[in-house]
Length: 406
Image (cartoon, rainbow, N blue to C red; front, side):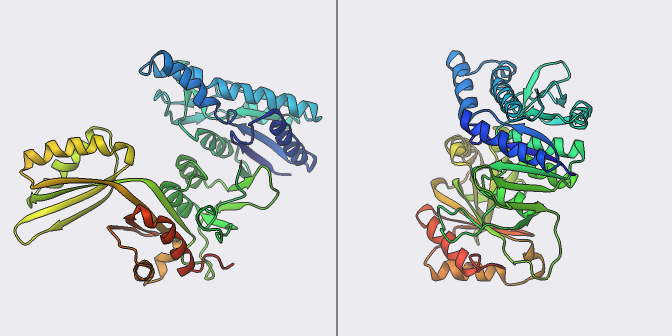
């Protein structure tokens, strides 16, 4: 008998029929003798609807009250699923985040979990009851309701699995696992049987939307076996686990991409100490996150400085940089929003040379020009024109043999 934490997302909870389907899945695990703790999201689109109502009154309203409103979405689904389980013959009880309790810091709308007291959930499991826990929410030290930010139910599920010392945390969604790349871009994309925490973290940060980044970080930190499965299609899913040094591991596990990219270039900046800080400091102060950075030093003692930010931050960052460029005596500033980022990810890069050259050669053969390059121990990212995104993904997918079963 295993203790399993199962998390079901908004799509899985999107209607009464789907909630009853989830109840039947949970009931089947109970019949196999497993103890199950269920974490659920609000119905698909419900959180957006609730926050839209709040912002219609005051877009700059109290974030504490926004959390109070947003958290009600999960309060509805835990009650509905508990009723559906009881109808299916399974003893069940719903728990809000503060009834567990899940204690967080006071950063409303993006709170971080500080501790979990799992005794009530364990007592329920030992009594043969299936606890249904509201994802995405917790309680602060002063007793206020808090929420964990977008995708926060994934983090709730993993955190509960860690606190309960569960045998596995299963994330149920509308896809049947983690793929080598987005099947909508490359139909030959293949579902991975397993992927390491490091690789999944890179994939999530580089544009893969399967799991929230914080949930992967949490799972890796506490060594929680994590599995991604489909609510609607039976199958083994993808296991996210610690790295094993199998000689048969593929060099590249997947290809991630992001359309949410923009580029800003400052030309003719005096090449002297402190220039990078002078350019990027004001951008950071404006809460704009910088991703890739390239600096080229010219023969005339000046430098060109290029960096990327999220497309939604482009106009704000460009306005700041124009002001900074004037103060630095730069020759010019240019921005571009017609770019994308494509990345290859794989722990095999650590022990194999020539991966970068293979990537660059494949893109060159396809006639794709590279604007910027960034590397880490297990990933290589390039910035290219947005018109070449799908061609680049398909080209690299084929170049690294990702459609072939390893």
